[in-house]
Image 1: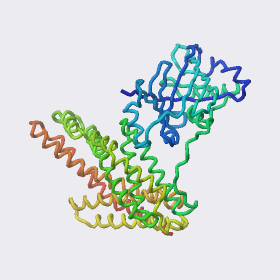
Image 2: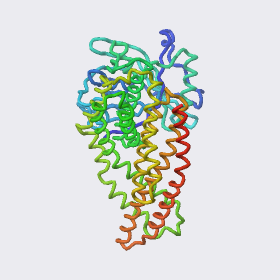
Image 3: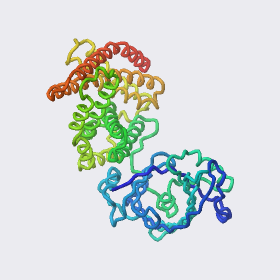
Image 4: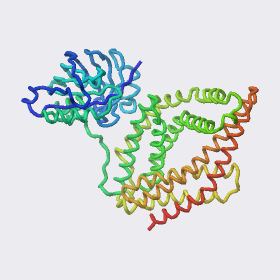
Length: 505
């Protein structure tokens, strides 16, 4: 089993050898620190693993096997934000534990993990305590020796790691005290990064095409790289079941697919088409669990809005049974997709496309000249679907047409958002307006899906001899909401048309 801990810390180094000899200043009286207690010294021996081309280091991840100290074992650290990492640990073993290897799959793929650097540290530990004796932070002073392929490096590093529930204000106060004493924040994000730099083994840069700045090709490839990186970064979050991770990963797949369509005059669609279809497959596999999660939240919210007097029968128990039956195996489907050869092939194909993109003639044009036409093209597609749907009679066919319009709205919004860094406020305003339309259409579609689910719940309840009254009330409310969204759509659409006109100039 692997355990996870959120690590919030700040690393420091001495500015001069003379200051290093003086050591760390007494932090008693700094912020809420009432006492500093010596916890002794421990020797640590850590071997860091990575691929031959240092893919983990390039993305700021570290994987080590460490002996010595109270937390001997395998440690995987995933960056969250500057100074914040999630540390996932597993027991000592001769090989990389499978749970940790799975979290690295989107980065390493078929590459082997090999020992890269060995760090030997003599760590002096102190605890920073408040007036009640509660732990505020752990202060460590490490005398480090790095060994890599015959090269060595040595330095002293001071680390302050907050205890659970302690705010970052303590780190700010400690930093202020340390600066006065001649310590500064380490420029390297981790010991491994410093060891690689000081043994002449910095991670190599990715080999990717870089068209001239300011061209449409440069802009589009930068956007695609951003979405590819998001896709890869969300993989371990999905495997860990972190909130919103599936949604973020699906959005990255959608943005990539939309960009391939929007910029079909920039990148050869014959080359991007197969990748686009594989992204569709991945989004579908991830969506099984996410769609049910969204639907459950909607029904629970609507149920919570009902007066207790209208909640007849074991409605919450029925909802739980229904959700359990639908969710069974859905997470397994998502994880199976991430563990598949097909998924690895998709990531490799994305990398290959970015390394050697199939650029067309439009890629060489100035971005501010070519992007408006691409954005307006997606807007025109949306316009046709919205206006076609609005001209239809109420009913299932119109519901389906509005759903198609919703999908077109996503693509138009993504196109406008992607172009905003180049086109500025006109694109930003169009994106905001299209998002409002998308929200209306999305709420309408979610209501359509919810009504179908509520009808099924009513049938199940009746079959079990329970009252189906509550499910009927919720169905009627969803129906009324859907009609309200349809009435709101024309006004929202007029605003979008005006924004598109401004972008056309």
